Amino acid sequence: MDYVGQIFRPPSEAGSLLIQVAVGCSHNRCTFCGMYRAKKFAVKPLATVLADIEEARETTLATGAPPESAFDRVFLCDGDVLTLSVARLVPILEAVRERLPWVRRVGVYGDTRGVKTKTVADLTKLREAGLDIVYHGLESGDDEVLRRIDKGGTRAEAVEMARKLKRAGITHSVIVLLGVGGRERSQEHARETAAALTEMQPEYVGALAMMVLPGTPLGDEVERGEFEVPDKFGLLRELFTLVDEARLTDTRFSANHASNYLPLRGNLPADRAALLDTLGTVLATRDETLLKPEFLRGL
Ligand code: SF4
Image 1 (cartoon, rainbow, N blue to C red):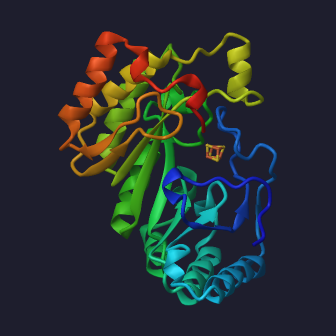
Image 2 (cartoon, rainbow, N blue to C red):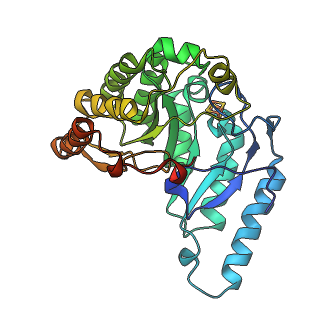
């Protein structure tokens, strides 16, 4: 397989075949993100991607074991594959369907910049060719925070993205980032993110907790004393607000990523009371023994 540089994928794609169709991120400016700083964005030649699909087919079938025991999901890397054109993505999706027919789900990272350039008809074409799920780094529903972190999109655009994906029948998984508003906008960030999620009604929401990476613009802001991450209970207070105020009607919610101090997951709205009870107890007691130790956190 032709992999350029370090490869990232969402936690729920841990068992997936990773096919790199582009290198890096075409935006590469979010101040907190260190994933693709060393990579210059490039779309990989179609022939390279198709050769990878063929190699995956041959090596999987050569084992003689049922192919779905090796993988039954595919994730197309790197950072914002949805910015690629429909003309480039459709042959890749069709090749996955034809050459890896046991695959049940294909996913990509995407955000408002990628969806903005596509109509519902474009997205429907992608879904019909085999795209099932888009992982969307919303990070915050607060426009002031989005501006400060240079996310490259507004809350209104993110809501519009959700509507388009829904109309096209593509599953929408939204990632939000606790602490990205800093101490200064902590509760505005949580409340506005809850409101954005209410408008978006995604099928999945994953909450990650901020870990500042040295060498990123945000890392520099922290060093200069211009940005302060809320403490662990501040992050949990944001999570409480998010769960309490988001009026989700049928969403799988998780905050069990390696970065979270208190791993939680549940269905909203069914598990809201239980999640709030757990969070409320920790916030009331401030018992650090209930939290993940710092050395066990990761990205
Ligand atoms: S769009 Fe995603 S991958 Fe690109 S810089 Fe922002 S967070 Fe990183």
